[in-house]
Length: 268
Image (tube, rainbow, N blue to C red; front, side):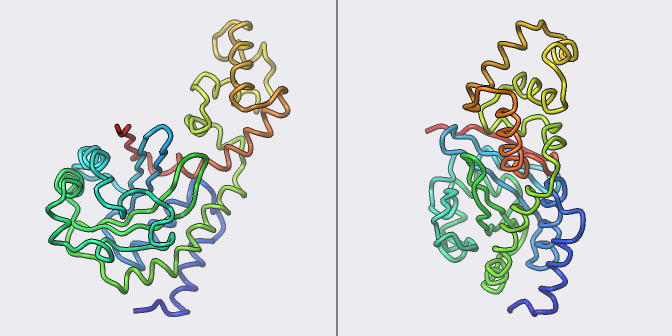
């Protein structure tokens, strides 16, 4: 069943309402999905094919999540619909049943060691874009029953708005406040200490002040500064801060969410 114009208007008004930023966008998207499409758990997953790292953020805490993510990480390559490929289904939202019969799904290791261990029975996915080297997907999970064609149609209607909401959230957020969330620039290859140095530079602190705050010697902070400049591909503090602003907006919506994140490194 299609979403009526009136219902779609109400849903989008809540999504784009005042206060949208990287700290609220995941909560709003999850609320919209639960009330419109219908699911038990919403996941935000980032797959980095270079580092082979899968990061999953859940909108709620539930038993079996950690074991399920680890099992899924070992077996998600078994079928293209689990591969975090942005070109799969031409990038359009899909439900598991579009490509994989349930009788086959429940016999696969990705189900038995992933979904089943997490207490999940079915899956749908929405591609929302790329952040750095990570492909970002929204997953809808059911603990009982299956997703239907009507729900997939609703997801495809909403998909462009999810992409736009994540983009808009990054643009309107204060980038200096984004850097206060440790790990935001890990995707850019910075070490935690390099992040610390850059964070205090962004707050207007001098080299000596940063060293004092971090309890480090000035030469050590200088060394961290040289390394982070190399990593960011810049030569001056002003250029580093400009690059940090760009990266903070790009990566923040991947990292900032419900604090229910699980990250696993996938072999092979």
